[in-house]
Each structure stands twice: as C-alpha cells, then as structure tokens.
Amino acid sequence: MSDSDLIPRAAGGDPAAFQALVERHRPMVYRVAYQFAGNHHDAEDIAQDVFLKVFRSLDRFRYDAQLTSWLYRIVMNACIDHRRRQKSGGWVPGEEAEGTLLNMPEESPGPEARAYGGEIGQALEAEIGRLPAGQRVIFIMRHHQGLKLTEIAEALGLAEGTVKRQLHAAVHRLRHALTRANVLASANGAAGGGA
Image 1 (cartoon, rainbow, N blue to C red):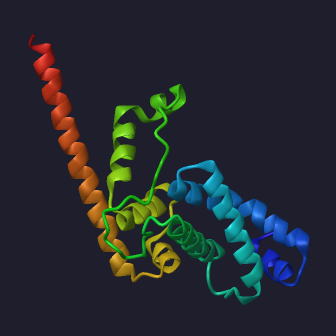
Image 2 (cartoon, helix red, strand yellow):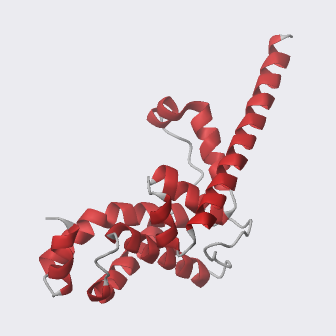
Image 3 (cartoon, helix red, strand yellow):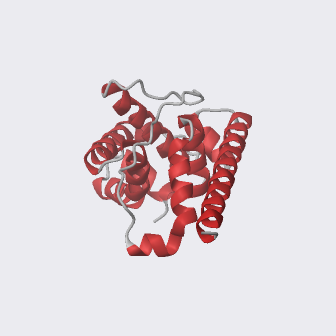
C-alpha cells in the first residue's frame, strides 16, 4: 500500500497501517538521527520521539505535502530538541554557527568502505564533518539522502534560495578543502619520491 493509502487509515486509528508507515520510514528517520547524534542510543531515542510525534499529529497531515518532507521536518526538530536538552547550544535552521552538530563516531572504515570510498571518500566524509552545521545538513539531505531542493526547503522551513546558497557554499568549501588536501598529498608524495 502507498503512503497516501496508509496515512488516513493510520490517522483513523488502524495500528497495522501505522506500523506499516513506521517500518517503511524508520530507516530514513534513524539514519538522519544517527547523523546528528553520532551514536546508536541517542539515534534510537530520537527515532522513538519522532514516531510518537507522528502518531499524535498524523490527523493534521496535509495531503498536498510529501510524507518524507513532513517527516524530515519532524526529525530535524527532534534532533534540535535533543541537542538542546544536552545543553550544547543546538542549531537553528539557517544559523551559520561553526559548532558541530554532526558528531559522527571516529571509527576506522572496514575493508568494504575502504575499497568503495578510498582515500578520496574518507577525505570527503571528514570535510563534510567540518562544514558549518547548516551547510552540512543541507549537503547531506541533498547528496546522501537525494532530496530535491524544494523538499529540503520545505523540510527545514527555509526559502529555496537559502537552501541553494547554503548548498553552493558547502560544495565550494568541500572542493577547496579537497583540492588543498590533494595538493598537500601530491607535494608529500613528490618529496618522498625524490629521496
């Protein structure tokens, strides 16, 4: 069944329909929560909070909107609330603070990740983690989650022009950082090769 079939049934009190929506969208909700929290325990708490909010407000869902955009907004708000509860300042959509919102665990990648991403992939992920919070969220939503600019704007409650500017700034920063890293690596390789 499609979301548009399940939503009215779930809003009407059908537990099976609500469970089907949860199972369908939980991976995305958890993934976004994990990207913010950086650990399984907090991501689970955030995901549970999200679906409680969805359960309580599903009857107010506007059918002219995409469910995924609506869910993103709820997830983002839950992540921000969670961060505020941890007394670390939190991030407000559109804010340009340099503080880290993503707190990805510092784990070394497995053989599959190394084979897939290589040094460039690792360098890119490290640079994404260094982006300002607003730029990082938008970059992840666009390039990791595959959302359109209009969906990101709707999910974050921002103007589409703001999303475009933030995304452009993120791409520019990443390109500059990776170019600089490549130049340094090449210089180190040349210095080592000449010995």
